[in-house]
Image 1 (cartoon, rainbow, N blue to C red):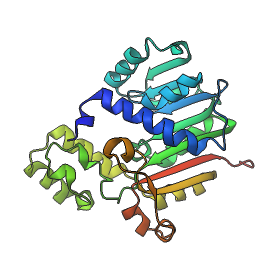
Image 2 (tube, helix red, strand yellow):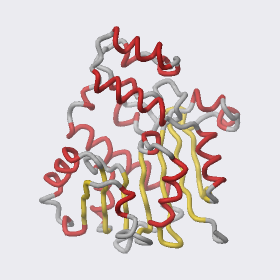
Image 3 (cartoon, helix red, strand yellow):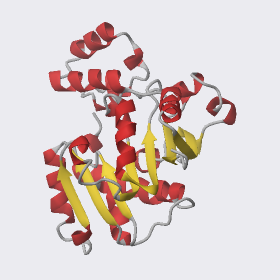
Length: 265
């Protein structure tokens, strides 16, 4: 397990850095980032991704199921000059549909969709939260990429650095985790990700089925977040890999998408 998974301050700073330097520039040509913007982050955790928007003066709402992480965020932002523009909620997003119906110009899901059960249902739910011209940003690792199973959270130094072994059948995968002494909670988390992990191809099939428009997409061979984590310069995937279904899932470490409702939908 890396230090960043234990230190909330480090993780927060990574979120803030990557959103400010990479996510906002990615969406900037499609949506104006100013004080009039209403932003929702689903799966906000410590809400580091929201800080750059709050710094600008955007109305920002973060929703997460983890009370501990949300409490950390509340404490961190308690002295922020724009704290009055921030709302942090511990709740299931499905329970907030009526409250937030048609409220947001921008919804952010960074490293979240791969943890969601029934992603088709979730994509339908998101439509009700957006304003007619609203946009949704997704950033996620394809399931089949070297560390798409999130095995970097393992306490074993060997397993946390072993690529692709999350692709083994469940019985072998869980057995290896047990042999290396991973806790029941870690094993349960990793097995759940094995159930919910999503490929590029499946994600795009869902978008097509639910009539979403892809405004922009970029595939990265070196994840933009690796710049702050490992001091590696982000690098987009080679074109022939990015355009090759199935194969691309194994070599792309991050996908960035900006989507919106189809006008005729």
